[in-house]
Image (cartoon, rainbow, N blue to C red; front, side):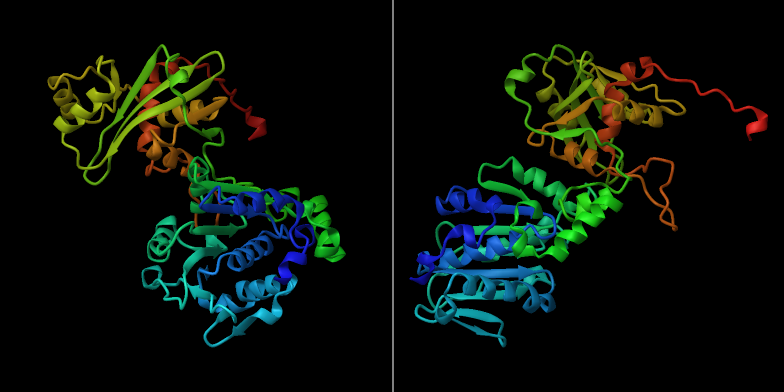
Length: 426
């Protein structure tokens, strides 16, 4: 096979050499490859797929983008490039109608699909084998992970060691679904997350013009440079909590938490009830959030049972005071409920307290909804694109419950009084 004479270092940038090893050893089933412009992540992915097809005669590939019209000029050409660079041009046949690449000797195929309607992306019948490789190029163009899962459920069956690649440039906003999703994927044992940028790529591969443009932007607009070329999530300026760390909180850590704080935000109609448990490290000003109940339509009796399972010693729970009847029912059912005092400015003061913490550590296994709300909570913009000054009252159930749990700390926090400006200044 001609590919044996190709040196990996000549076709894959140094930052992808470790990736090649873990793919070769079949250590993971999903690979999330993110990075900036010119990082060559798409090139590395296409090479790995061709190498896999050459190694396994039952391996076929499905390559997807959100829209079909973008396939030919991007991933189709990319796969042809990989075949050429590996010295296999004579062994593959490429067709445009339908958009397909076929290994002549075995009939193995690489097919290309647009996913405008994810539910209609059906598994393809292959003359030989199954779809061992699935590649989502520019996965951030999809609307949600739910769309991707729908497609995976259709394509991801038929044989062993199915490998899925997701390649993308991280969107600017930390609240974009793909940036949120990758943090969830990162903690899975079957997922490999890789980040790359152009600085590890040989300059002759990119060309001097590309490098010069990147370096010019670095001098003139470092935030844009960090986002576009380094693949960093620089934010939009609307994020409320920039001090959140998403990671598992270990049992050893939990065993050291000596004062647990509990908060409860009542559900209304379709809104979920949210119960939270957390620990505040005063010395290091770190908040650990490690337990939640988040559910809509939960009766007070069922909610009480669920809370008692997390809180068997019946520690005090600070609850939203806007529903005294609900609080009384919880008391009658045996919960030790304390009403949140709230008051004018309590929302702003509470959020400011949380923003000023050194770190808010959220366990994504125990508290997936808390993680989602804290990470995606943003200020809204007006019709001119300017940020509004008030905090949106939606998708903030865990945030409210956390404020209630910490109310005594928040009220005791020192505040700086701003002196009134003299009349001549106004």
